[in-house]
Length: 64
Length: 534
Image (spheres, each protein chain N blue to C red):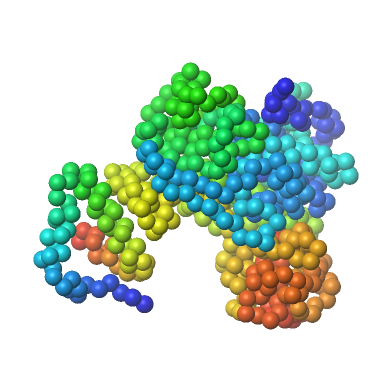
């Protein structure tokens, strides 16, 4: 039974964050939205485990 | 030459029931001579149950309508004695192509599993489907089966009297009264019977219109299913091209919500759309044009006393996935053997409540699947469209995205998990043939498993002993003795890790219970459970 890893897991966080922003550079809002959607799908498939994905979806929902 | 759907196949003729002094009582009256009503009537008549079909029309379906028939319904039709002409006439296909914008993003091959008599799907116009069913009715009549088909008979009222249903029927020669022990309403999504009874039919409306055009063309498009998302010739919408017999092609164009239906149906508006899709040089004739909207909904219960609803009258789905007529045939497959046992006093009336339990389960599965397809094909929000387009974009480059593309999840039969009719399971055996599942076909010596099962309760034994007939409370289960050595498919689909098997199979060819070895007391108990007598 896997669970979502919420501990820091990215070795060089600043580099990742910069890469994420760089990927969006020069894109219109619509192109950025499309990129984000593709990215979510690609990463979700990499995770694969439905339980982990459900945990991630719940974590991402606005708190209220 | 007239098209088959222009010829009255069961024109009105006067029935002696119209001249009777008192209303005549029939065992079963079926309202509606569409695919579902005809299948119900054939099923009952084959089992010797008297049945009268009433329909206000006298012709088969106008236009192609339902065109895609799946394997399980074809197997049901085999049991009803009319699968072969359907498969002979139908078009078989395995390859599908998906287009997004101006390009093909991927293609798939359904690669049906070997070792089945029937293909995964055939495409066949509903009018042929109904014609072959009517032919089967005539065959049964010729050998004296108790089945009647009354065209030009419109039901004006239906009232459940507790021990029968009282009907008032209009004909070209005036009204007459008729009674039925049981009424099966197969009168379509707009079911007049349902309305007369004031019954609910709630669900979700999809605000969209689709143009269906059947065109006759001599084109060298291959026998494949082509689906377009957001193509240049129908911007922002979807399109489908599917082949039918006789060089007829089904074209489905999504039009959106705010349109003028009468305008859109006019040939001068349809033809330019089709030319944009097919290319200017392709020559075609329009056979039939229709515009449809759809809903996903079902009745809360399908059985209301002595009136039982089946097919679109009971549940309606979007057309994506071919789950309308296909699920209707599974309704009657489920219902008719139960109704026969109840009519003959061999099972309690409560057995009919398992029709509700099992087929509502089936309807919910179909509604879920077809709603999901619809949400993919016609995204309902900006973010839904963004994800849909992202899936389609990725599907061109990477395999993982292709299973997410949903242009219709094609109809597969429902397994009645948790049904009150299910008996014991055996864990060593394959999950796909667990209690509640439709028996899976396999080649066996001298033919096919499902043909050898036929109807009636069967004891399928594989390398196991059992008596040739087991009778319990007037219901007999007859043995079909097979051996694992017969074919590898049989062992693979029915034995799994077990060395031998005994399956109790229902008349609708669903598995009721299974064991490794024959145990008389256990089989008797399962037979009682499967017939609502436990």
